[in-house]
Image (cartoon, rainbow, N blue to C red; front, side, top):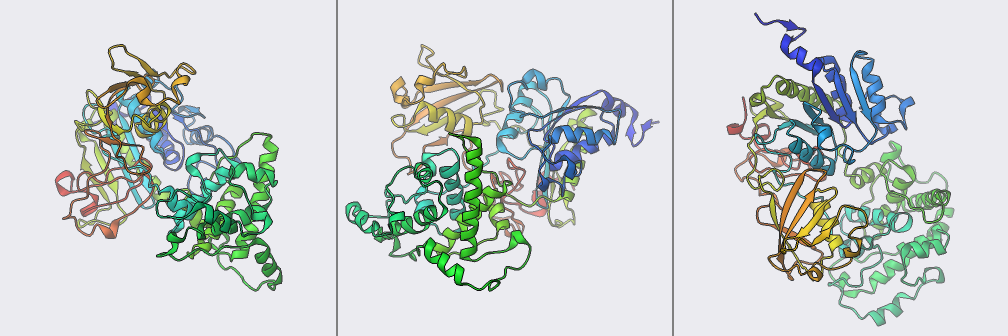
Length: 604
């Protein structure tokens, strides 16, 4: 006869009391998960999260209260969970899981790792650490009413990176700077502007008109003279945006006229841009101020919740002025050389982006957006729903019980759908897929081919854009397989800094060269075959070809009613089979067929 301890078999209950588990993330899913774990009988839990509690978390992260705002999520979550089970042994780390202190040996201390993360870099990193330590990982994510849980085990299942996940959508620089046609273009421009004025300047995030726009065949000498037909305040020499802003003392009126009047007039001189487009309409601060002062009080009343109101042009002018004054004060308090970092939860920063984006939308004849809409688009946010988090946290624990019981063959990928499938089910379990033979992470010998221009690609670009951003490495070491083992990049600080500005060709790298990149923290080695190309598209630095998945395959054409259940968000992923593949933030673009997966791969 089976002996039970509560609802669990005695041997399972005993295993729970002794096994150590790591929970990565103490946010929406993490809070529900920690509570579930201690109530299920898990006694030895370690939780790590770098975030602090924000007031916006309180509507769904129920381990936190108003008095906790500003405190460590991991630490407060531990304290709150101990009230459910005072005998639990919980260790909290207010830190990043990508800190080198949390190495492979650290991961080997656990029987199971459970992810409750919201970004691609951390998910990739934990995936690789669990592969290196040979520890089971339960991955999860939510997006509105949608959710997913899956189990990853080295050699038995697909790893997190086996399936392609396209990068966040980007836009050509000339579209952002010269010819925006959608609200998102204006929002991206406003975020770039924030960094140009108050943050770290990036040459790739320039906001002034792009005179190299291939569409604009014009005479620079002639149009420069025409563009200077503006007021003295707007007669700006083309220097660094931040440098000029500082010289004006961040004067809101001067900034406004430079951005929304003179730069727009400058754009109008690029005649060919406007032959088939509606031309933008410049705004003048003093003229709007005069009109605003004559407008009777209360003439235009916004209705609805404050964040969902859409103001008039002068309202956004005032918001622009107020946010600049606030941000200027914050910058002054930090001292010389200080920089601000844009954060969707920072009110002055969001106000600035809301105002600047809406003013640009008005100039380019688009419908302006509310602060709520701007925040959602600028922060790539899908509204979080507490019930979805709770369901997914429960499913994580159920899969965790299978792992602890040694029943990996019973584990499933489980999808939570917004609408019932044809079998009237919201929860649909699917059989776990085996590892992808061509995965550049979990294959026996990871190898990729990268197409780039060795004459134009610098060592720094290889390190930051390709190895760190594209392939998720944290601290890569790279040597050239040239018979001499030439070290191109070293993770030791300062050792190869002199190489950063040099081109790959300066080191004899050419078509067919092979590079070996090692990340010792992740216990990960990647061989890179270099394919030299001088015909890359404009603004494309490199392409991944060959075995490494660079673009998701198109969805099957015979799926039923795909469009009616589509849901989109940042870093979304396309399905390889007729089922969704989790994206790095727990979000999806497409949910296909009955319940999100093909009946051949699903349990009924």
